[in-house]
Image 1 (cartoon, rainbow over the protein chains, first blue to last red):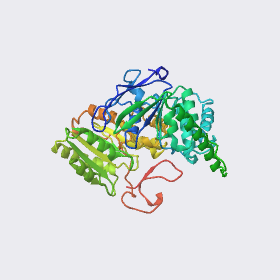
Image 2: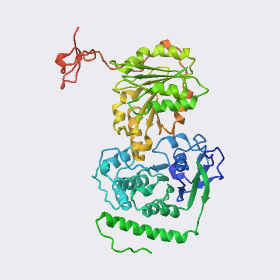
Image 3: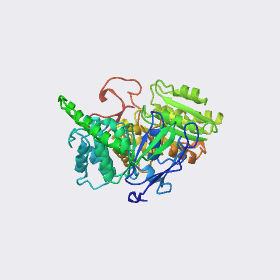
Image 4: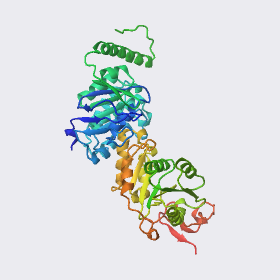
Length: 259
Length: 235
């Protein structure tokens, strides 16, 4: 099985914390799909993406099974991170390697045995589209802010890991341009799965998976129904982003232009 | 009885991995646990209280814990057999990382923390080189890129190693460790178990408590700063 051949991921139901079966038949995720996993803290959101990340085979606490193109994937596919079709961007935005951005990306490129030409630069350029704080090739990884690190990790997942499925755990917490990230990942035909509390990300996702008591409680497909809310949240979010940049730049905010 | 040797640097998560193994196989399996440490250890008491299994600990004191581990191991096997154990887990402190406590007729598990830094696999090459499985812990705390680089570095040291990435507290990914334990052959002949690799030379006057600095003040295997060749001085 090659990465390029990945068509879809199928999630088969498991059990809730009380041992009751989950109330869905199957969830199929195709390239370019966006899903948000929502629900209160402790409702099982992280376990849900962890099942996808490790290709659960009825052997996790949730008893879910994850299929790739309708069958259970071969072991090397799951165990070798360089072949694994899933990239997880965790909540953790610390980078432990005390290297420059260039060295760090170079190390990753070499460990994947890729052709190095240009990909490091392209990754840095892409990362800069996701954050207002400029990332340079010579900056040290350990001195990057949370937003910068996360932007770089997302760009790395797109261009270097090149995984068809990207899992993002509470991406909103790091001060990055969410909408840009989503549209860029969509353009690259990635399947996106967000664990999120953020209204904009939740509304921009095609489907919302509502978690409760360790299991999937509901699957919402709002379609056009939330059009009005999306327009309002998008405008508000833009306003808040502008304000954030102004506050950072030390400016006074004398007027608010929000639809 | 199966023999599992778990080794790795302090705080890598050796006991957490041991705990996951015990949890996985109780109550249908009898498990004994031996901890070898230097001055203080509590794991034997904690695991005995938590799981009601027979445990023991050995303090090595002034002697290298891996040396002591080798000295007490045949007694430990006899003890575990008397306890009718199906699995004996031996956890070793493995302090200087130059030693490799792994044995024949057993499953060698090295536990290494992903947050220890990307050069760590090279520094632990003696241990990684002779183990069967590397359990990489704390992988939930590092990025995808770092995880891949860490794995690549372990492969550079030992390409045939079975690498298992885990958040050991949650037990994610440990299914492959459990499978290896299930496939492990029991000990056939305790009398013929040997170390897989030779331990480093450790007999010197520093070992026996002579505290002056400088090779001029010592006997045994000595070297100066600039001459990389060791020479032997003494009787």
